[in-house]
Image (cartoon, rainbow, N blue to C red; front, side, top):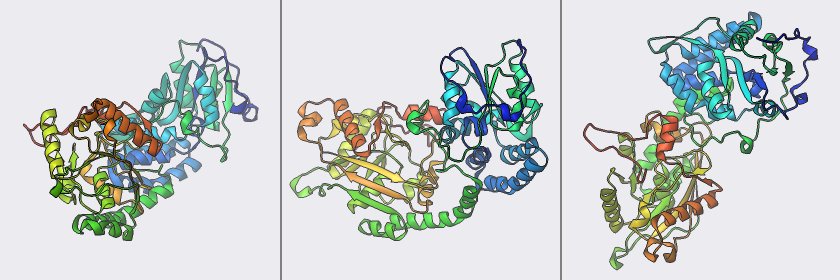
Length: 512
């Protein structure tokens, strides 16, 4: 470093982060630790557990749980470095590096962003150049820190790899704690002025903090609440992964114990939906702990004797089960057009599903024919969104009929998400029904007035946007212009196209 820095003051002389000013720091450089500093939580176990479960499944999560007591003993009685090495080995050994990177990009940001320390973020975000120095594996944290927090530099522990897989070991200089942190910071800023602000939360951060012009501590405070969602630097619209809650050691144990029981319960719930007459499914779901709430007044079934065609139920898209819960609410099976449904989901579905092709004319003719036979359900977003946002509605549906009934669908899951972008979609219904008490709300809105339809001269895009706004207002969601391609490119690195057999046209969302 180019400047001479005063020696490290005694721990009691480091001022608290609350005393650090944040105005006028546009030209300053800040270096912050992560766990307990940038994040409220001081333990990195939940994030290791997320990687373990999302990449390795229940058995890798169990292995990490069994290894965590040893990691704790080494942490407290030997060194922080020794404890973290155990977590790294238990989590990463044998995993494909590409899978770890995928989870770091698509899963971890949702949980990291929900744990930002408000005072540290106040200082960190005010500085023009931002650096994070952490003992966590860089591969886990870099995507979140750079994309969502605007970090310019991320210095973390480097995991060892061999032929595209992690060995479970770490590269030199080892886990970045204490002196290793200071050495890494010195190397990074060897030709630059010393960082202006250093922020840490524990004694092992002191060696790097003394290299900064100013140093501040983030004392542990159980009363500190993470930064509120509306103040996040960048909203999380898309995220992946099966787990709803951040897996603390206790929650991870509950997940491991629940999955065998939950899978049996899910099979019972799916069998009830698939085998029982639709008028009885509502009551069977309630008996099995699945809560279905119906609001609004749905239209009566079409009457073929009068030549009445079916209505098109235009639904918001939360999981692939939306049309099934629509049918449950109506007490009669409603066919649905689908985009990229797995073969297993088609087999166990209690309603008729019709695949859409990539050809707009073919799809339009198919939907018109289905409407002549009766009611039909469609989700014009083309893909699901977990957060309180609605994706752009494809406009094709509005051109095909004026008999449009918007349906605002919402659900609640406490343990597992019933959607995936990276994993096997065939497990989506099982994961939804594996929740102890999942819930769905089906809200029927008023049929679209004739003067607001394409038949009255409105454009299909105007109709689609109007229905999107209706549903978003009902759910208190925010409308977006994001599409299926945007989601899959963000989460899976592709456009969401699924080829089922060579030579066949891939299934794809309309208008995407």
